[in-house]
Image (cartoon, rainbow, N blue to C red; front, side, top):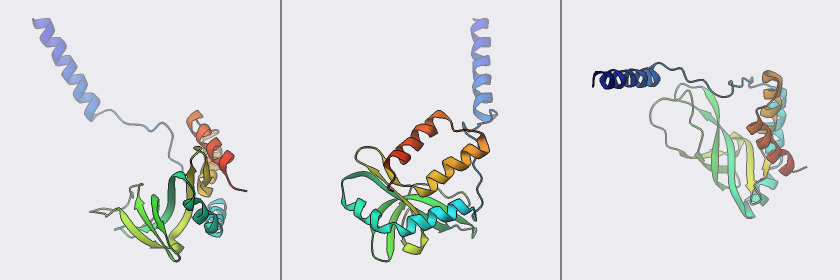
Length: 168
């Protein structure tokens, strides 16, 4: 009986330590890119210039449609959030934020309408599972290789879905 209590106490202590003191480490280190990275600026240009393709793909069968938009947080920081594209109109885009902002505090409605000037990237997951668009994602893969010395296998697999499905 005493041994069982000691074992139970040890298990509880281990559980408390695991819950409160273990340091979570991401599988991949954070990727740091400056806002004026020339490849990111080029990716934004390509995304904006190819809005006609985005509109056409939205009318075709697809699994998902996403847009990356400029967001100003409650702390007046600029972030870029991936969102579901709900509607793409002539001068604005309606989105549902899927990426939580890091520098924002307080309540945040997730459904927003942005002027098209806030759009910095778009991507469509086609019915075959391949992606079109995602210009900034291709830059992220390239910069990750530079910073990390390579890509983990799961990111290499994801990159192939972009490279294969990417519009010329």
